[in-house]
Structures are given as C-alpha cells and as structure tokens.
Image: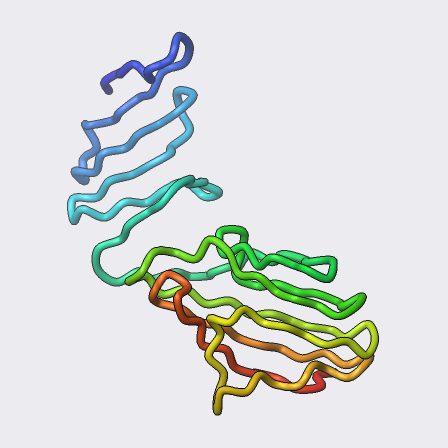
Length: 170
C-alpha cells in the first residue's frame, strides 16, 4: 500500500497497488474506497460520488438510472435557465412571456420539458427563436388545464424546436 499526499495540509489518500486482480484502488479516510480502476480501463466510483463541471465521455454512456433536475418557475416573465435543469413547471398568474437562457454551445444537443398549468385565462408568449410546427405556437392551456411542451436545440439556442407533447393533461 502506498500513501500519497492529498494536496492539503490534512488528510491522506491510500492507493492500493498490490491487489491480486490487478486493479488500482483509491481510498480516502484510510479505508473508504472512492475509486477502483480495473485492468480493462474501467472506473468504478463509490456510491453517491458527486461531480462538478463538465464531464466528457468518449464512447457509449450507459446509466442504470438518470434523474433530470426539476425547476419550479414563477412570475409572468419566467426564464428557463438551461444550466439549472431539464424539467420545468409553471402555473401562470397572468399573461406570460418566456425567455430561454444559457443553452449549451452549438453542436451540443439539449432539450427540456415544460409543464404549463393555466392559473386563469392568460396569453403565453415564446421567444422568437422557437420554431413550431406549421409556424404556429399551440394555444395556451385553458384555465385550470395543464399542457406539457418539449423544446430542443443543437445550435446554441439560435433555433428551438418546440412541440406540444400533451394537451389538457389531467
């Protein structure tokens, strides 16, 4: 077992290079396995591992489970911040004008779902960059109804493809 400095004034990381199966194990706190590198170049992180910043994967990404981030919007000028999540919801309180911000750069696909519940008879305005089927936005949901809409871009938000996924849902 080798000990390497963790780069801080306290703590240490243990690297076990003597595993009989050839794997490399990184442990924190002296015994908690944080990362195991296999001889096939696979990496297994501890349950609950957290990552920040951009993570690039070359090849196929296979997930056992994928959770999207939900964001509740409010007000009559809500901003859908693409860096904040992929599933948004709004219950209107008046005529509403949406803005979309922070899409990924051109060449990266990004999509989000919007659950839109009408809190009354209100108009809905969309960014000019939204391209709807037949160049016509769907009607706003009737008072008390919920519509589900989807949006997709791959050119940094220059064009958003908008579609009505569900009309007058439950």
